[in-house]
Length: 483
Image (cartoon, rainbow, N blue to C red; front, side):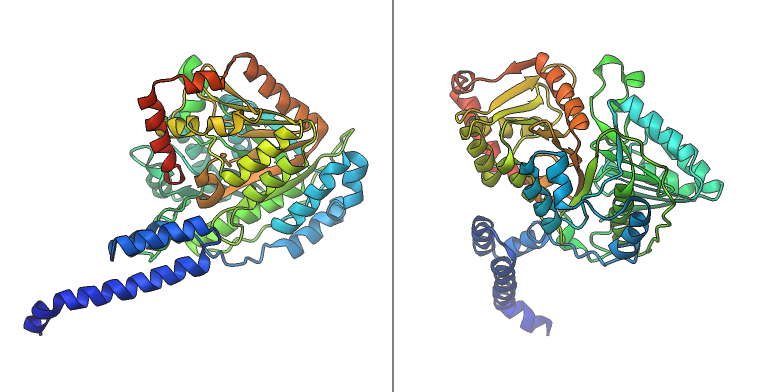
């Protein structure tokens, strides 16, 4: 047998290459909706026998199928409706806000899993110290349950403070569940995951058992979500990871900026549903939410909000669709603040079409980025929007990780999604769509303050830099889908 195999191993290898290549090509052709993506993968598979199929297995298959949970919408929203009434109708959007946002309500109902609801309160936590203090207070006062999902949870002074509170909650009988992305869990050594497990806290890594768990096709996928739900009453969501780099108290004036949010109301149940599904995927355990009657919300104006979950599962490119729709309905202004700005052609087309219609578009990115390669790649793309009238601002000072967007001073979009290929296609993200004029004005105020300390990028400046630098940026831009 060995002699037979040693004589004919090239034939076996050729046959294996043909079979695996054919399967991979068939899968790419049948599942990829973008012809450029499908063609590119077919080329990789054909030009690199066996290796190309393996690379496609690891990086090309980006669909995780979540199992449906009992915590989903029917029973949960029946409880919320008892206190708040049904989901926001189209007429209410038209009565309270500009009619242009009625199509956005319809779009959200069609492409997202959760309804637009009233009766929500949203508090802006403007920096790391404020956010961590609010999170720590909520965990310290937890009575029933805490579920925490995050991309990065560092084993540093901030991380240990929050970890110790989670341990204390667990010891007094609170049901604590912690889910950290397998990549983000390795940003600090030793990992906080091991520390929490040693103290008895149920802790899992998202997509951590890539080989032993037979999840190799999902090796390139990450949860970038930041969700904390306490007692199913309040939740924290936004773009802030758990690490001391965002604490002015510990880092001084060099601390990284970010914006986080504390929410109450119907969106809390939806945020719990998102985190519980990810927990079920990672651990196999199904969680059931117990919805407590919320406190009455006193407000002089409506706050309509919707949870937008997106990722390489049934919610593929949901954030992309919502952003495209928002750019299309804008009439006066679009304000965007993002640490990474690498939109695809569809988003660029929607943006520049809005600019040609006379919409004022301001895009803010950090002057000093924490990811140099990404910064170079996105600089190569600036001219694609600037030559049609969009303005790009480089914000001076410490790195700002905030993801903020407003349309016409009424509609806002905040959360964990960056404007880059990874967030828009590969990562699991969670954002909030918010219709609230007061909230939008506060977000626009933060953006306006940043512009006062920003440098306006010009086409002349971009085009008069050394050719080798511009060429390098274009080469890096070619690899931007994988950065």
